[in-house]
Image 1 (tube, rainbow, N blue to C red):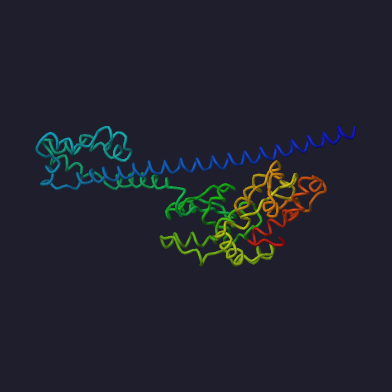
Image 2 (image 1 turned 180 degrees about the horizontal axis):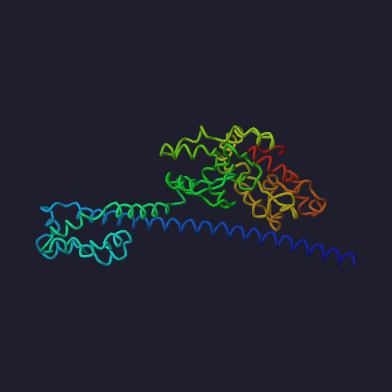
Length: 374
């Protein structure tokens, strides 16, 4: 009977470990999906850049028609059919071009189709006169709208990837981000793991330092900023240096979480140059840690990975060499439960590694960017 009970316990533990492994696989797939989405955005950006350049090129040709003098109207024709083909603007392209189509759909311009037609028309002066009499402000406004839309498609893998935490994202903020040529990442743990700059507070909002997104972000970048950085950058029409706007004067948050933001940012810079705070460490997460006064499993995994740590899976424990065992940490709940310490394989890892450490210890290390008690 006792053997049956032990076997049942082993089966349950095995199933739990399988569930954890599946959750890790799901996280990897989500991360891969995010990467593919970024690649798709890059391709969209390239496509819209090409389209935008073509719009500008052909829009300039249209405005040249509008502003040409009477004596310049024959500049569109050359001797020979070959040069005529070179100067002809494709009707197919006009139909596919939103800006040109809108321009040429104006009632007064419907008789003007291509530059070559203008040049060969028996009454070019009257046509150009009609063109010049059109209100060009509407045309310009339409083209500017198309240009603004094209601006929103930029390469998310380069430049500034901005994450905004603790501050409501308004239309005005989105416009400022867009005008400065930044990329506003999703307010998610995946977004936090790719951010290059983070706005984490303003004059009315204090920093929340032990959230999953912030702990991921502080392991990734030292650009933890006040909202004034964005608003002042927008006012000056350029991206300002971050040093002056680092969020290092939030005394309420520093007292609440017992850390110094300035020290954390400086330590984080040093750690990132060496691969991250947990670089070289194997972290095994015990059963029952995720969600027990701690973030969800996928959030825990990304917090550790953002700091450069290696996630150790249960089946891989026995395959570790002595050096890898020595650089292993067993992560428990706060406080650790008896269930988490009774597994013989995990107990052996803790004994030959650095031991048992709680999630509170981990979060404290992350926000301070220093390993304590290891």
